[in-house]
Amino acid sequence: MRILVTGAAGFIGSHLSHRLTERGDEVLGFDNLNNYYDPALKQARLDRLLPVPGFSFVKGALEDRGTLERAFANFRPQRVVNLAAQAGVRYSLENPHAYIDSNIVGFTNVLEACRHGGVEHLVYASSSSVYGANRKLPFAVEDSVDHPVSLYAATKKANELMAHTYSHLFGLPTTGLRFFTVYGPWGRPDMALFLFTKNILEGRPIDVFNHGHHSRDFTYVDDIVEGVIRTLDRVPGPDPTYDPLQPNPGSSSAPYRVYNIGNHQPVQLLRYIEVLEDCLGRKAERNLLPMQPGDVPDTEADVEALRRDTGYQPSTPIETGVARFVEWYRSYHGV
Image (tube, rainbow, N blue to C red; front, side, top):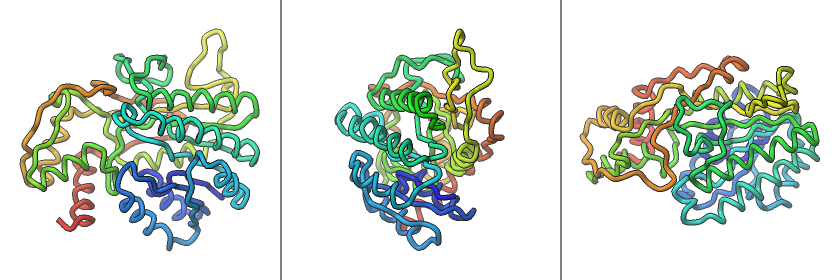
């Protein structure tokens, strides 16, 4: 298939692009290589992809409608995976306009391009952040997500609503994936595992928010990519069991689905740090801090719907995943 992947120089997008080309798909990557974090890391991911047969690349931002429309017109994708977005909860407190530009305006442009380009299926990144102030664990797609606690989360919830509108009005099959804390080689420098590893190796203290008592459904990137591909290959239709008198937020009478994609094995942050210390052979000096604005204490994914519909089965324990990350980090940074 011809598959357009936005955010192809990003963490998940680069891993996904490799997997798609390995199985014989033709992939067009689209990314603006912005400086939210070190563009050199994004370029390094891209440099690994550019020689790969079946991969091509266009540099552009989602909010640049002309560039995006030309990419669609020239490549004529059959399916689209939209992973490009302004990420990060804490940064949304500092620069809210970046989230509106990329996640709202940009996503509108993606939907329009898919609609007019006759795309068979749009898979797009949502986030576990949409669960916001919810406290019932595990988080399930059947739960209400009307209480976001960051603008980032609000834009991801908005993406799901926008996608449903296009599925309903124009018959565009869409699937939203609520990613739970993704980690692994080539990961993002603003994420805890990268920050912790860097500081421990440099002999500096690590900032441990909420005194380390919160838990996260850490999900290894290879498991995430497997779930994305299984979802991409399964074009949704109207849910025959959908009841408008008792609506299920995860499906619809339109060709629309939303799934959690996580590990379903939450780990306390203090345990995560212990595993990292074991892999590095060093102890961390911990700077214990209160919870940050916009953060939530715990996340846990109910992945039953994704397992039922696609056979998704995450299989990488944190001991394995963290060790692989540390091996990559030492190699990439020469430490």
